[in-house]
Structures are given as structure tokens and as C-alpha cells.
Image (cartoon, rainbow, N blue to C red; front, side):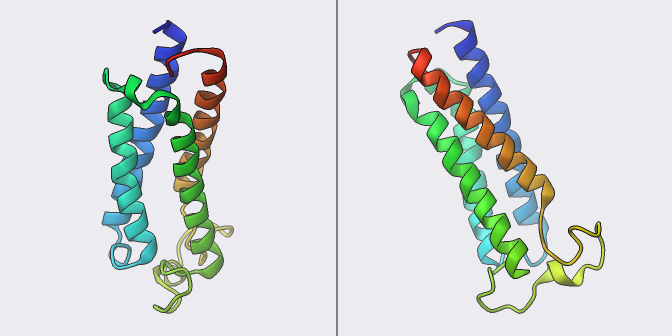
Length: 146
């Protein structure tokens, strides 16, 4: 395993751990979040992403082979889709009952996000995870053992 491969894995692990922990904290910290579709999805995804990040820091990372980059891309797309649904429906249940949700009632936030339910931190981490996944996938073509 070369140094570039190790650095890429460590970068991917850092992104996965931070994104996964942020998902877990966001999903379990909100009062209405755990009872919602969005909260449950982000809890499950957060657990999976944290486990993936930990595995990337261990010798077992080689067992993931070339799947790590595509997995990170998949995680990021689920995160972005979830945020898009929350933002467009204004509901943590994606418009399937439950009214407008707490995102509409808060009254706080910037003009762009007030009343929308967007979590721009989650969006930013999902974009970083997407970039990390693309980097890991493109490295797969040039380096063995990613």
C-alpha cells in the first residue's frame, strides 16, 4: 500500500466519521427528528457511515477493495436526496403526514433557510463526501488496492 493510497483512505475516513457523527447527532438531537422518516433514515445512515469510516482506518480496509468510493458516493446521494425532500416539502416526513414539521415553525435562521428545514451543514458534508467518493473512485483506476 503506497502513501497516496493511505492518505486517500484517511481523508475518506475523516469525511465519513464527521458526516456520520453529524448525521447521528442531528437525528437524535432534534425533538421531532427521531419520529420522522428523515430522522430515522439519517440515524441508520449515520451508523453505517461511521462504521465505514472506522473500517477505513483499520487493516480491514483492504477487504472493502474498490467499493469504498462508490459507497461514499451512494451515502452522499442519499443525504442530499433527504435534504432535498425535507427542503422542498418542509416536513421531516417528506410531506407524508405530520404537517409542516418543526423546520417551518422555528422562525430562526437565515433568509435562505428560514422555514425550509434545510440543514446546510448536512448538505456541505454530503458534498464533501461526494467529492471524497469521486476521488476514491478515480484513484481506483490508477492505483491497486483502494
